Structure formats: C-alpha cells, structure tokens
Amino acid sequence: MPASPPHILVTGGTRGIGAAIVETLTARGARVVTHGSKDTETAIGADLADPAAAGALWDRALDRLGGRIDVVINNAGVFEPIAVDASVDDWHAAWSRTLQINLQAAADLCRRAILHYRERGAPGRLVNIASRAAYRGDSPAHWHYAASKAGMVAMTKSIARGYAAQGVLAFTVCPGFVMTGMAEDYLSSRGGDKLLADIPLGRVADPAEVASVAAYLALEAPASMTGAVLDVNGASFVR
Ligand SMILES: NC(=O)c1ccc[n+]([C@@H]2O[C@H](COP(=O)([O-])OP(=O)(O)OC[C@H]3O[C@@H](n4cnc5c(N)ncnc54)[C@H](OP(=O)(O)O)[C@@H]3O)[C@@H](O)[C@H]2O)c1
Image (cartoon, helix red, strand yellow):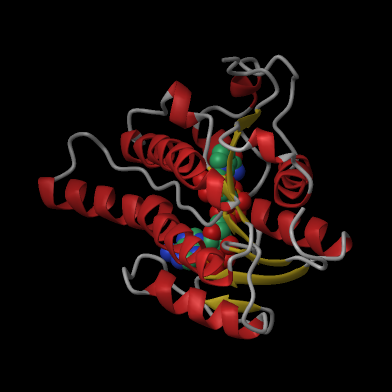
C-alpha cells in the first residue's frame, strides 16, 4: 500500500479516462495532481510533444504535492492517423510525435519517479495506460500508435523486473474501446455499430471501468502482481 493519503500524479487527467481516474482516486481519499496539455484551474499544463515537458511537469507536480509523490499514472496519449502513402516527412513527423507523447514522456516520468522513490528510500508505484493495440495491432493508419503502446508494455515489464527489489511496483492497463471523445471519433470513422460486433460484451468500456482498474493498481494491488498487464476490453481480445 502507498503512503496514506497517497500522493498521485495523473497525466492526461483533464478528460476521458484520465478524468475518471482522477475522480475515482479523489473519492478514495488520495491527494491527486492532474495534468493536461495546457494550464487550467485544476491541471498543470505541459505539452508532452515537447521533449522537455515531462521533466518540467514532474518538478511542478512534486512541488504541488509538497515534495512527495507515491504513484504516477501515465495516461496522457494521442491517437492520430497517418496514411501509408503520406509524404515521408509527414510520416516521420507523425511517428515522432506519437512516440514522444505516448512513450517517451511516460518513460521520462517513470525515470523521475524511480529516482525519487530511490532518493526517499520509499516504495512507489507506476501505472501505465497502454492499449489492446499493443497486443492486437491497430488500423493501417495507426501502426505508430500500436508500436507506442507495445513499447509501453515492454517498458513497464522491464521496470517491474528491474526495480521490484527496491519496492517499485509497475503495472500496465490495456483498454479496448472506451467511450471517450477519442473512441467516439474512432467508432464513427469505422462504421459505428459494426465495430461492436467484434466485442462479445456488446458494448465499449466506460471510462469508470478503466478507472477502477487503475485505482486498484495504484492503491491496493498486492506486490506480487508487479509486472502484470490487465485487459479491459469486453473479451474483444483474449490473450
Ligand atoms: N479511448 C479509448 O478507446 C482508448 C483505448 C485504449 C487505450 N486508450 C488510452 O487511454 C489513454 C486516455 O485515452 P482517452 O480516450 O481518455 O483520451 P482523450 O479523451 O483524448 O484525453 C487525452 C488526455 O491526454 C492529454 N493529452 C493529449 N495530448 C497531449 C499532449 N500533447 N500533452 C499533454 N497532454 C496531452 C489530454 O489533455 P488536453 O485535455 O489538455 O488535450 C487529455 O487529458 C490514452 O493513453 C489512450 O491511448 C484509450
């Protein structure tokens, strides 16, 4: 169990799954600092497309949480298409942006968290929100998205194996479709209801369902679960 009340940084907490995670953790008594691409009354702004942004976000979050962070939830992410016949410059720009936001920024925050846990000599947790795409792949316009999420799974497993002995626990959540703005765009661009036929549960997940899994991993999951990858996809991809 993290310290009580646990101090938690949630990236991408301004809407969608991240907002549900913030709500769930706050209701359970955690002290949560959230983040979005721009400063708001509640969120620390940091555009994770900027390679320096994750470090600056860590410093501001640590300051806002009085110098102690117990859990980081890397949830911020983009799902932006790039066509196989786009120009090579556009193709490289899309790959670079998606890998920077979805993977490198999360890696940078995991790194800062591990150094912080080590400096404090205290245990800590990392919860990374990847995707079913890490295992199943994604559409022809989203190779880079699937690759970024597969990278996140491999990164998190490496952290779990490398730092368990120091008290660092690391978990991944792999949602399938989740009814947020992002999923709505995706569903409508793919023929809407036809996609539901691929989900045995008959519906996409609610953000609160993903949030409950993330909160469990952040607050309660036993140490022996470290390295686990939890699917939340209505049995649309069973591993
Ligand atoms: N929805 C799904 O179907 C689904 C499925 C599998 C996995 N996931 C993963 O779950 C996570 C959350 O998805 P979601 O559907 O809730 O997304 P969303 O509704 O589009 O929200 C994305 C969040 O990430 C932040 N963000 C986006 N680009 C950013 C940037 N450049 N710098 C800083 N923050 C940025 C947004 O901040 P602003 O509000 O400031 O833009 C927002 O808080 C993502 O990692 C996504 O890949 C989602």
